[in-house]
Image (cartoon, rainbow, N blue to C red; front, side, top):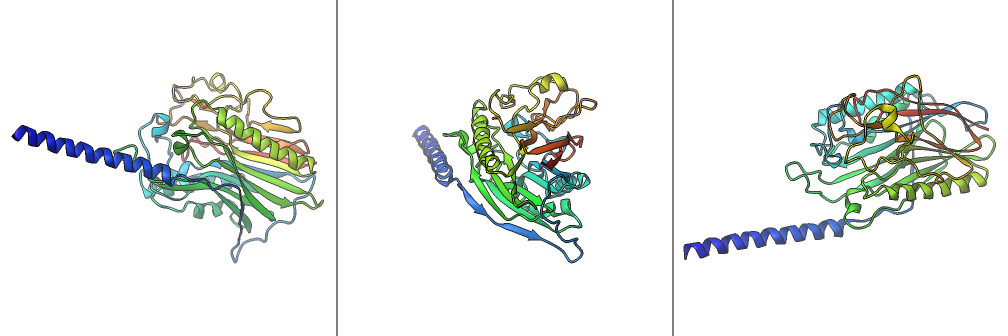
Length: 366
């Protein structure tokens, strides 16, 4: 009799757990949604002591654009991330988020960009201790008024994994800062994988900022963060093709196009050979861009200095080690043929505050 009671109790417990799991799965899938294409607000930021914004962009002048993936303020050099095969799922503390965000912005500030692009900037998240990280970014434009555009690309339900320290519910996006006035901005939705993988990926998009030039044309500035956590990496190629089609249409209309951000592709094509460490089993996403993807009229700019090769990204499967950590350059730029690239490089930040080093490009409008 006692044995039957124990079995019955265990059965009820297992049934209750099963019901909870089913309800949780229903909650996750029911909560999933995509933002879609939409117009974005342009926020003008100023302070009493700030220098007024620059005038319209001009042809012939040299401008600098930077790009930095902030890694939601978690990735110090000794950090590893569970989705890359590492151990951690959140920033270690509020202090860690503060230190990492300040460090990232300090590096970007040192580049003195006219246009600054950021990816993986949380506005509210379990993983980032519910800190609005956009508040840190204004320091990148210290001393000058600027325009800011935010596009959300992540709004997840509570992800109860890993079980010991769940990744939680998070909201994040990409941020564009400009010393020159932005007339309008928009969010463009990118395709993502279907099924369960869509829950692990972001709500991928790119933002488009239209910046007037003195000639009456526009500098069209794109901020992008393409897919990494996919089954075979093909979806990132589809996303890139859509971006290229959009840029080509703007170029053919007479505008100047500059795109920057995290492509999640091996932009150099042979990063394992260059940096001396082979890709691991969790690095299947790190593929070169297939030949023929970039159409005529556009040029890919992969920042690289042969005299001092520096990667823009490290795998987060382990704490960073120059001897064993797989590295590659996934951050870069894409420009239309009426934009002349003067110089471009990766800033060697030693992966101190993010799993990405900032990149920059100097350019002129023809």
